Length: 404
Ligand code: G
Ligand code: MN
Image 1 (spheres, rainbow, N blue to C red):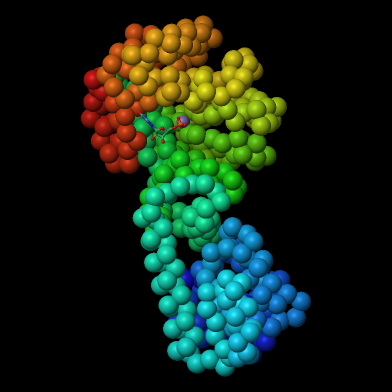
Image 2: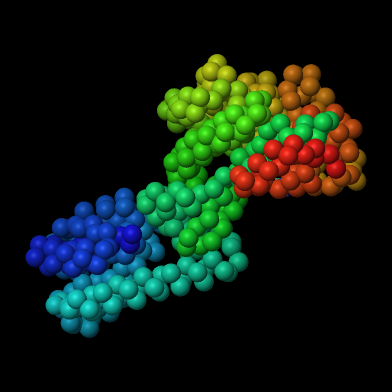
């Protein structure tokens, strides 16, 4: 439902607008002054704002400036309400970036037409942006728009826009699927498909990784249990966990609850932590990992070989698996150095009783070298791209050997 915020200090005018719009099936938030209005805009991220110009304390100009200074609210369509017809006031509002204005008193149809045309325009803008080349530089307005859409999607708890895809992880010798890496996809109704490469940094920079991550964990636990019950008792899933999530004080109880709710054994999850991010808060990370390991959860170091201080972490962190970064696997058959480094990593890992996964295996020649070096597990486009649940399930249930 489209959510409209009405900021108007005059009670009779406010209530009139609220009644009118509620009758049109809009969801309405009402604020009696500018301060409440700004707070509501930030917490609720409405689809459109109607705001009176002349209000005590914080007036309409200031409300607009405050909203434009914050990424989450900067692109919400903003319509001024003003009793004045003085051109200078309207000009000032429009110069500050308001999208339209209504002069009081206005008729029901003037109000509805202005709102509808503004909402339509916003949809067109978003569609246009989604078609242009995506560049995630965070200073671009586009980044802000993706962020606004993400905030709006979460505020509306529109979680059906998120999907989990699964990429098989294969036992290198038998070619059988033993696990899957879960990867989130955001199919935005406004922007189209947003890749994890775009979504995750955005979610991390805004703190939204916490609710999205919780949703993902619940979803993956549920799905993993379904596959185990279908006969794949030892099948497990891996989940990419950001440091922001791991250091949350309630991360451990939440993950244990997701496991318990699904009657899933803790060894059915492996949490992937990217090497390069650990140094942000090493001590908390170690404590959290130790605590989770005491409950039976396993950890993998993701993108191994590309972060700093990697060998120290092998000693300090309670991990079970190393995932060798794509970089070393790409063209490993043609690059003697990559081959030597990968061979060394695998031997070292085995001496430390760690399992090794080669990530990003894209060609048969790469797979052959990885196999020659006794890498335990393989993952990559050669074997399968990340797949939606039903397609992954088909692959799993036919038990196809993915030896190429
Ligand atoms: O950082 P992490 O290892 O979690 O990255 C997983 C990402 O790698 C996913 O987005 C997935 O789609 C991608 N990926 C998986 N297999 C391959 C592959 O064979 N080649 C490339 N280039 N990317 C891959
Ligand atoms: Mn990963």
